[in-house]
Image (cartoon, rainbow, N blue to C red; front, side, top):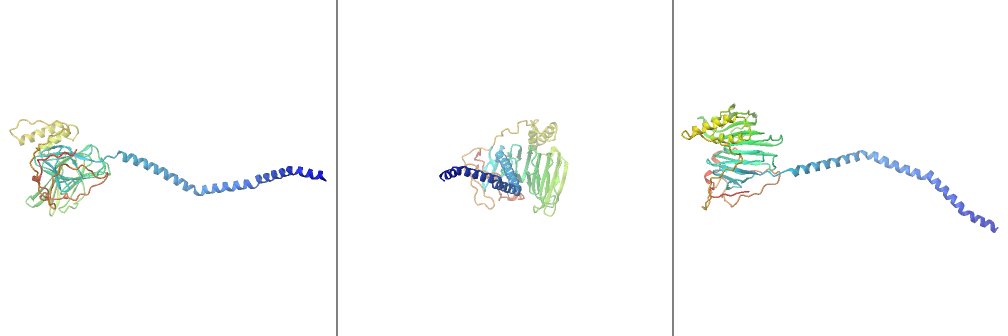
Length: 389
């Protein structure tokens, strides 16, 4: 009896092992595969159901990365647009925030500044490396511009007098360089052109008139004529090279006195021809140099019949012109302008610029203001020179 019990006890581990093995075998054959299969199916179904979301998310991540790279490259290459006077002679003033300063070489011209050039003056403004504005004697203008070099808008608003525009590279389709006069706006993309504007009290024995003459040397700008109230009259007109156009605006009518007429070089002022000679030294302006030189000499001779043969200017366009204003210890005096009680002269021109890309809002004189309401040129301070590096 004892032996049987001992045999039974001895066989227990063996039977337990056999039972465990069978149980494990059953689990392998039934429970585990079923669970794995169910789990795999759930994962597969989830992926299938959300595949579109996964793909869209991946695409969004790629797009964001591309935009981030492009923005970084673009912003990293932007420079602040700083307009400054590179050449100056005679009496030139800059009015900023109703305060008047004497302009000098390297003075910065901020958006909204009013630049006044006296009858004995001249100023050349550099607008980006490839854009220049030459303000001729007896002229006044103010400038608005977007503060990114080479991009956005530049608006030269001529109140009276004349300017020469030189643009060496074609302006982008989304950008703008515009010359406004009291009765016109001229969109310039490239080339060299000149605009002269004047106000007449009695034009052709009829009525007061605003006149703009436009000479195009190279390029093909568009011009818009405006009526007396400053509203557009008709469609924009395309101006041709080596052509002259006149826009006439009176109280009751506005019209083209002539458009795209043949350009007569000898009708241009001596200083204009001199500037064209300078420009032609390094840029083709559509006029043979010999023809331009001959016209310049003839105009000078007609102005000064007893003078010897004039010398054609052949200096570089960036050569410094020495200012003829003098330094004095005499206290400066200024006169007031409309809506301003004082016009203080301070020691230096402010050098701060607006936020990159900001278009300064101008609240001063409008571009259709008549000369009778403009700043008095005699109030310029010629006894103090302030350099704004």
